[in-house]
Image (cartoon, rainbow, N blue to C red; front, side):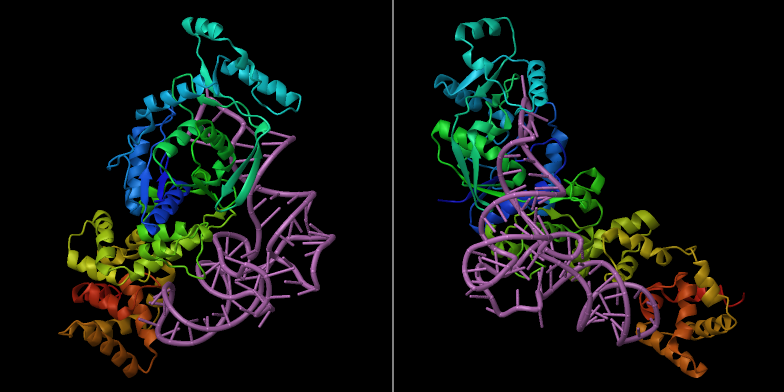
Length: 476
RNA sequence: GGCCCUAUCGUCUAACGGUUUAGGACGGUACCCUCUCAAGGUACAAAUAGGGGUUCGAUUCCCCUUAGGGCUACCA
């Protein structure tokens, strides 16, 4: 049997971290087993689904490189892949259950149901539907329907059944159908509900493994009972743990960015993000860094954890730094370039490239490049008062900087090696440690107490800027 | 309330009854490197939620408690 898995988001918001991780696990499973990865859009909630959200989901997946073999914007013989375009299919299957007496019309209003629920809660009873419409006669129903009364279709929950979910991550999980009520399978607007549409589609699309968040585990018995009603074979189930925020509560806006695409905008590399979310709820030995291919090779449902995982920015940051450091410098430069142009209105690409090269080890996220390099692009860069006090207002600073200025200005080859010789030579002649020369110089050139290696900074800034900046502190 | 899931360092995880003084990673601390800051290297601190069983032996199996989470919608 070939592997066919799907990611089935509902377009009611951006692709969030948890959704992306679910998509990734499905994608990895499909790629690993040379199967098919399907994208199916569960847009049956007409009030909350939007085209913008759908586009955001596409973008998020594209950014992470999670390409789908079947689905919207792709081919496939099992379409359409948007549930709202499959209404006739659901209608047909609803009718089938109706005909076989496995489902029935219900004319209870939401208000009545809410009232009954409240009553049940008061009496500390299970808030279950009382099945009052099970006895509604066809004639009565037709009459009400003719009067324009809204109605839904409910599934007749079989009683006294034990349903076992054979979960690939959690093992067998038992449920008793006596605790489940006659849930709605078709809403009054004629759209199917999630539990119904998912079952019909998963069957018709020949999904072999359902890999989804474990918030769906409790829904699974409802779905299994539908499979049985239709006489369909069950797919395999694998419920993966949820991703939580720092306070161990379900991820929400409170926890910062929950949308995957925001991480792109914040300067994270997609491979770092992919690597990070792969490690949330999954592990392989002591490995931490996985390329896309290694992920495919090593991924297995056996390695999936059962307990929820907390999203940790610190570790994501570390991983992003790792990936920045091993990426082609050219690529990092390409990512930095627009930010630098925007911030400093510069257009000297060659210069920018050399500047960025000095900060590759210092970037956690791409936008860090802007504040880090201000003194490379502005002559009126800020000078830290503490630095000025400590290194520039000393008695010997003007003398040292003056000597440096003289010697550097005489350099024909303004290269790192030659520059280093100047610094070392001066320190030696003065009989002082290198730092005594370097610190005031760094202060004068950058206004900061930290920077990349001094010789690199001097070389990249170039003779003209260096001489000019040193001169500011020579006369004073 | 009912049902279900989960429980190893602060966090992500390894261990699939014994090879364990419970391993790795992030973060933290210290040191090394060094012109500073990073990066890199080394070291240290840090966990099996609690209580009962089963077993010659439990992180690992079972039960209870506790704590988190999920479902209980005409949301998915």
